[in-house]
Amino acid sequence: MNSELKIYNTLTREKEIFKPLNAPHVGMYVCGPTLYSHAHLGNCRTFLSFDVVFRYLKHLGYKVRYVRNITDVGHLESDGDEGEDKIAKRARLEKLEPMEIVQLYAVDFHKVLDDFNLLPPSIEPTASGHIIEQIEMTKKIIANGLAYEVDGTIWFNVEKFAKDYPYTELSGRKLDELLEGTRDNLEGQEEKRGRLDFALWKKAKPEHIMRWPSPWGEGFPGWHIECSAMSSKYLGEQFDIHGGGMDLVPTHHTNEIAQNVACCKKSPAKIWMHTNMLTVNGQKMSKSLGNSFLPEQLFTGSHLLLQRGYSAMVVRFFMLQAHYRSTLDFSNSALQASEKGYQRLMNAMKLIAGLKTSEKSSFKFENVKADIYNALNDDFNTPVVIAGLFEAAGIINSVNDGNASVTAADKEKLQKLFSEIVFDVLGLKEESGAGSDKIDGLMKLIIELRKDVRTKKDFAASDKIRDELLKVGIQVKDGKDGVTWTTN
Ligand code: AMP
Ligand code: ZN
Image (cartoon, rainbow, N blue to C red):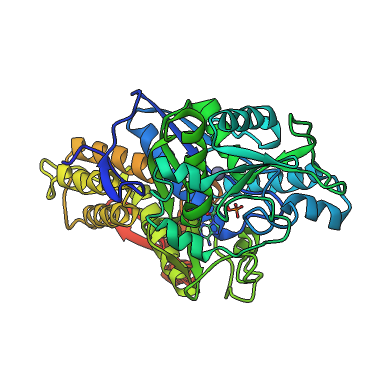
């Protein structure tokens, strides 16, 4: 078994053996949401991918400090230095306080992630709660000669930085091309020296609501500086993993590295992990393209793109069936296939405890286990993990049908492996349907009643119960050792 965890590092473009800087402690920072509206399913995919990373690292015995921030100030409409603050704009339109907007969507965000069974991060810091740290970092970058002030706004000097450090290392792009790609004379940006320079601190116009005092007058922080300031505050100047969606590579993460290096001469993270996008008909799911939907709409089926509703665990399973670095295209047929797959795993889970044991196993437990762990160690390859679990489910079903055998020791190991991988690492859980207490209780009662009618030789009634259950997707099997049932 390959026991070393390998992670693909965007920075080196290689899968690297994971060696924490300070084992058993691991520091992981993931860029969190900008809470100016509901998180859509695409956002959830990114956080779900890092939930599996968090869970697996913990499963391996690491003590993980997982920091995922909340952006509640400084994220402008353009994702750059133009436009209105996304949260302030929403607050203005809805006639609410900016922090009322943030609170509204934070409550919703946490509920949605809880529905998907994501573990909460260890720390969830907000940008507005770390203004002092962002000002301090900005001061250091100015002192190191890599940022300058123009009329109350502080700009990061990209071209000067790029003379000494590899500014485009993460994206792999060429500086010249980036320079050519930028537009000249953007409104309100005439004062910056270089076209690629970005704001660390912005002077607040009189109408700007969110503002704080600073050595350069009243203003607010740029979007990128918050992550540099908060990651180094909670994880140190260098930590193990920094993550986010791939769309953050060229600007947000590139600038984050530049800020940390300019401030402290250290690149913040050893490994940069990026998740690929959830797409709809091949197009990135995003609010601005109008092709996004909310988890709530997915659960109830109340969106034009949805034929019907799907449960949170089915959606989680659907997301796990793609590798985090591949795109994942949304479709009803894929979700329906995931529903079947999820049920298959839950049914196998349910059957294990009741399996009859034998002297010998007809399969090699170590092989089953190795397939699953090799996949997890190969850059969290969850689709291959699921394939391994399906194979195990096949064995469980065969033992249950009397076509394969398992020893008591292997049965115990299989049960432990299944529960650790399915529940602890993949973060799936049983929900209504197979495994829920109510359904289990109800099925017990129905099976008892069916037994009664069979004792009275009323086979028509017994068959009717079996056939009607089948119509709602529950299969009853009369085996040598009693009656079992599964859902399909
Ligand atoms: P935002 O709130 O827009 O800053 O996005 C929060 C996180 O969701 C970022 O890490 C984005 O990269 C990620 N994200 C946005 N859209 C998608 C998508 N369609 N698929 C996967 N991740 C996404
Ligand atoms: Zn960030």
